[in-house]
Every structure is written in C-alpha cells, then in structure tokens.
Length: 345
Image (cartoon, rainbow, N blue to C red; front, side, top):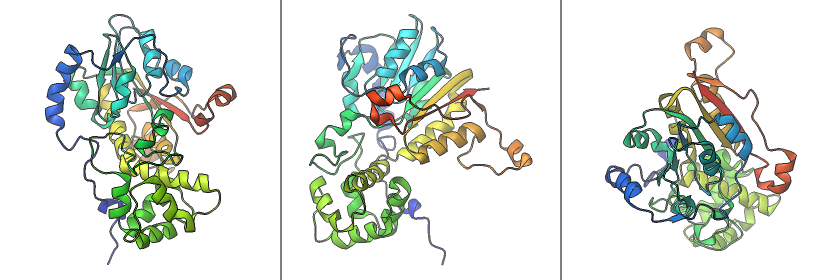
C-alpha cells in the first residue's frame, strides 16, 4: 500500500485564527481601528522590538509613491512601516498586519496606518474590508524578532525556561508541546528534516516518541533534558534547528507564505511591487519560484512548459539582495536574510 504523505496527516487544531471566528472579528475590526487609540504610543518613541533588516533596500525596492496604498505584512517593531510612512503624503495609507498581539504596542499615532491583528494569509480579505482592491506595494519580513526570542514565556528560545509554546498568535490552540505529544514518529521525522535540516531527524523523532509517555515535555528545560542523548555536534546549533522546525510547524509558516504569495497578483496594481525578506532556504525557494513562474515548483528547462506557466510578476532581482558587511557588523542576526523583489506586469 502506498504510504500517505505524512504532512497531509498533520492535525491542525487551529490555523492562525482564520479558521475559527474570523468573520465576527472582521466585523469588529473596522470600528476598532476607526474609534480607538488603545495600544498606540507616541510616534517619536524608540523602538526596542527588533532591528529592521535591509531597511534602506526595502524602502528603495518598493519605489514608494506618496499618495498610494502599501501593505506591511509583518509589522513587528514597525521599523519598515515608519520608513514607508515617511515617504507617504497625507493621502497615502499603510495597512499593517501582525498576528502577534505584542506588536500593537509599537503602533505610531498616525491616522494613515490601519493595523490588522491577523496573519497575512488573510491579506486579500482585509484589503477588501478596507475598500482597497489593489495596492501599490507589499512587503514581508519573515524573520522572528529578537523581542519574541527574548521573552521566555513565549517559548521560542533555548536560552530560557518556559512553556513549550511558540505560538505567534496566542489565540490559536496548537503549541509546540502539542506537536511533540501528538504527532506520529513519521510526522516528527519529516518536520525536523524539512524545516530544521536536523542531521539525525529520524533518530530524534523515534527518541521523542519513545520517551514522551514517561517524561514530561511541557517546558523548554524538560524537552532539552530529554534530547540530551541524541544531540549531535554543537548543542546550541542542534537545539536551534530543532526549535526552528517546531516554530515553523506550530505557526504553519510555509502554508501562510504560500497563501500570501498566491494573492499577490490579485492585490497588486500594475507596476506595484512585492518585496519579501526570507531567512530559510525553503522560504527563499518558494518566493523565488513563485516570482519567476507563478508556481512553487521550479519548471524544467523546456520552453514550451515555461510559456504555458507564465508568472504575472516580473522579477526585479536576478539574485537576492543580502545585507552589507556594515549591516552585519551591527546586526549579525541578519546574516541569512535574502530580499527578493517582483513587480506586477
């Protein structure tokens, strides 16, 4: 019998709110943005959320027109957003998405910004809500902020003890602990292999399944203790890869990215640009292939097939833009960042 695709069997208790009560939340969203200043800070406060990667490159790539509408899919600390707002006039507008409730504290007091506290996989739905069928630019910075890593209770970092959570959106149900306790050995093997590139992913998965009935896996320290016998090479690097794989799975990061990319041709007006920063090889490959082919699979060198599958986007970066040596000295965490840009034809 042919084995089922293990990824298709992965149980999703709740995918980033969108499958739950999104309709009722959409109805409340517009009045909240129009009538409330809750969560706003003074526009001249100093951001401590995280350093915006490739800041100048992103602003230049978007080719910002002062009176147009732009989307920041990953508001975070608001660094890129402020850069866009500085280029807009009174008629311009920025729609900022972030599913992490903590990001709201970074909102500047500016009437030109609309904050959407949801995953960017709902991009087109919320643009319609705010009467914007087309926008002139979309940016996404797919990195996890240092702010999130530095909060032990969020469970993203191996440096702190705390619950094995890793949810970007605290409204969803699935946590990293749930993944470890409920996924099959095959599912765990595949996610550690694909998302973490863990060298002994099969051994790791078997070890977790063999110990999860006897050992508690609710906290970071408990999980690290269970992992000790199977760690290979540099322990810090190994644990970072394992945690990365769990975070990507918990938040369905690849699924959300695919959904957002597929909406770009519909939401970008002619000449509008998409600028996306990736930090993982799988993310970069998805963006690269979609920008080039309108597909997530790389097409063979067959002119006939290439003509049949033509993208509605024109690639503006033959090679990805990477941080300068100067930026890397200030922000070593940007070393794996790659920026790709495409324009709607």
